[in-house]
Image (cartoon, rainbow, N blue to C red; front, top):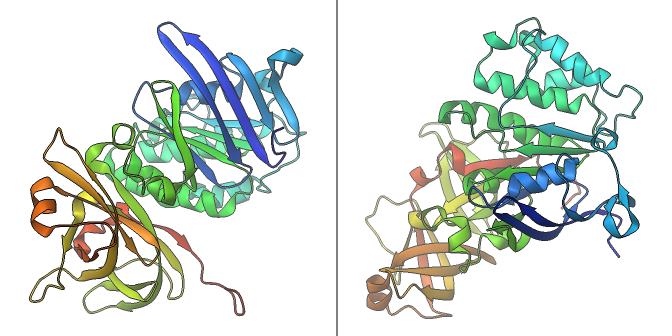
Length: 379
């Protein structure tokens, strides 16, 4: 029996030549990412959850049954308390921003606002107050997408579905909208299912991940644990492989615009992060940005030199490369090196090594997940 504190989904069927057979659970809070390459079934799953596509299977939202083919149960799309944000904002061109938002609010004015946010709160959260009287045609791509998110939230959903909301935006605009999505994560009390094919995006925003390939689930679990796995290269992408670490802000160096972090007693230095001392920050470290050494180097520009122990090695015999997982303070750091370097260093499991990461590797996309410092007396 499904846990009533989870979203329990299982769908199977075909659409043209595409075949889907997937089952997974997601918690009733936080962001769960559906991740994988284009054509793996991410959007199809989201549309099945919204009731826009119908495939054989079951869907339970906590204690509620939205679909159960054996029992002949299928809740129609308009009766599912879902907010849907598409790749394109799809705002009504004849309505102002205010009109688009109010349309969302009117869609089901009788439903209790599960997310606890009213019109003013949503406008403030997404920073769209100055846009209210504008027409959609006068908005930038990022502004349109923020309004689309606001419209979805004002429909008072109990589940928010986001289908690659950043994929149609250029890089600067994506960076502009990220803080608002992070604010959603911190503020909303409803679950979010977030579709993406960008592992950096997932690492920055999501708590859990469901990895998909060719219409099947490859694996799922907490983002930090899944990204440490070395056997997921076909799904995660060879050159974007990496991990997420959590570190605590210790101090800021205003003179050099650097931030000093503590990760289990070891110091990590990054470009200045907008985070309060004592708060926690998520760091994405890409495997291709990691260098390994068997001795502590000196006279080197790299600022981050961390002690660790080799946990796992996977050689790709058909290529020139190998993946090494290093335990650093209980968290795994992935390094992508050549098989020749692996042989020269004679690396083996349980061997002590030093992990080197350039501070400039922590660009804005690698600094995310800000959390407030704990209150006095909390751990």
